[in-house]
Image (cartoon, rainbow, N blue to C red; front, side, top):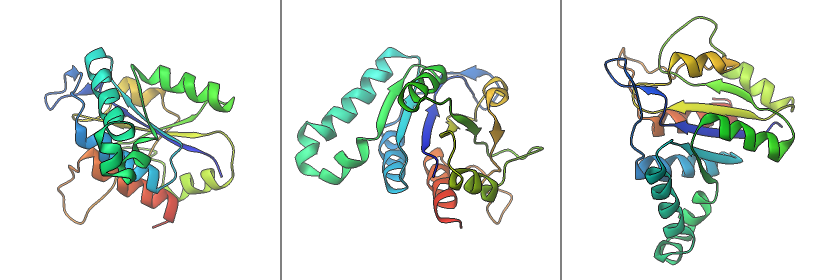
Length: 186
């Protein structure tokens, strides 16, 4: 089974007007995606922002739950946050996975947008089951990953589809659904 890694990019992403922006890190994204990552066996979850102050915030959140007052209050949260790492950019994540595994990861962009040649969940599950290089799922904040980030990826995963035309899940919800579909075949 190939290892799964996850990166949440706060830059470069789009805002609702299509401008390239850097979004803020939220405590909920750190916590909730870490919990889903731990539940579904993700090797590491990177929170990526070029803003040093926000990286320090991520470190502070992790320290609170790993060695601070939160560690005694909720040991389960400490276990989940153990998978969280932070990096300035996607290139740093790729380099770290290469150092850790000796292989460049297969990059899979996620998007709520429909488009041509989307990778189906069953095809990605088969790739994971066959072993091979690690898979890095790349999630975007704001209004999604920029075209340049998507173009760097080896594939774009098909979007999570609901039963209505409304399709604007939080990244936390999308990450949990995608991990469940990849790991449990639903």
